[in-house]
Length: 421
Ligand code: EPZ
Image 1: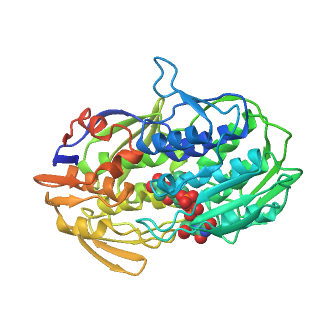
Image 2: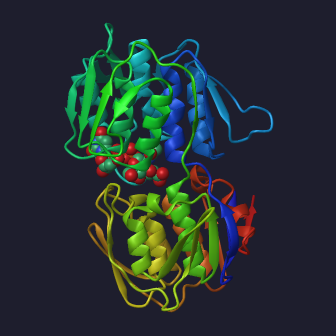
Image 3: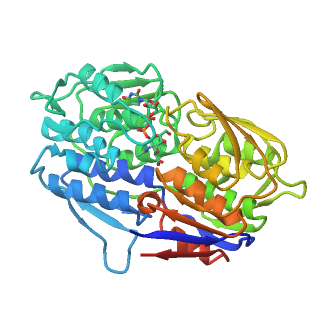
């Protein structure tokens, strides 16, 4: 099994191209199920989760291809839905497979999707997806580990108020509503940039959507959607990760395509923590401020709050900051699995429930560590880049799920990083 070896202590310098956002590409790919015409997506990142979604869509009747010479352009074409089942074997690999539920139901009138069950970062139910679809007239039953959903005479518009924002449920319902009869209103909708990106894609396909990016989204259902071309927005989590790679190593990186406004509150917390961030004509530049890294408290929140997907990386950064940082995770229940691994590298972290208190140390030390989920894994990479000596990271398939060519991008800016089989 592949592992990554890092010799730490090299300040990273140079330019890194930011890829398209995985979490925007996955729902946009699922949107191809909504039309019999081709959907062309640009800036689709070459990551394992995109491959998993592609295989699932192929099983459902979507033809997919990369036009020659365009590895990041993906054409998806679903003349006819040939199967309406997302099997357990796909969904257990990637929870985002659940995003085919809304589009399948809207286009084919039925869907059978495996219940995702737990995952490394917590139980993560899909009750909000199901409740919303029920309100739109779907009949939903759960048995044999599957969601069986039917809407034999089509979905109808409804007012859906979430008790709390959910990215995936907002996406699923927004897609389903594009082909429903009448207007759907989603209140307490998620406001993440990936929601706005999906809405842009759907509007290009002929959907009528207002309010994406705010807490109330209105969708007027259409008879049919058409093919379109859409560019996926840059990955804000990849951007934030490399911002912290520059800061933790005391280097300076220009992140080409990175957009400061997509970082939301993380931009302010990073600035407080001693990370210099400035926009450039092509993206943004990140370095460590002259005063050094300073312990800074953060609490994860839905966008524009501090992203849960940047929490582990921020914790790695705080491990070598001056003073203490209190990091509170409010989105997922079990998202501190990087803590014992960082501790093995010399970090001083105490966890009380959903809060971790990080007391900065002057140096981390390389150690063999194990990746547990995507963002936890990359926090170990960041720690390894800053640590003295060698860090060996195991189970790096987690990294491949969401970071395109991570080792190559880091090596190109000076990191001593190597992937071994
Ligand atoms: C998306 O997951 C992202 N995944 C996650 O990124 C990200 O961490 C998360 O949003 C939060 O920003 C994709 O976009 C593919 P949610 P999602 O529904 O949609 C609870 C990564 O590393 N909830 O917004 O599954 C849920 O348990 C991944 O790239 C319900 O209770 O997240 C959580 O506490 C990891 N019932 C909260 O809501 C539901 O029906 C927010 O989850 C749905 C969610």
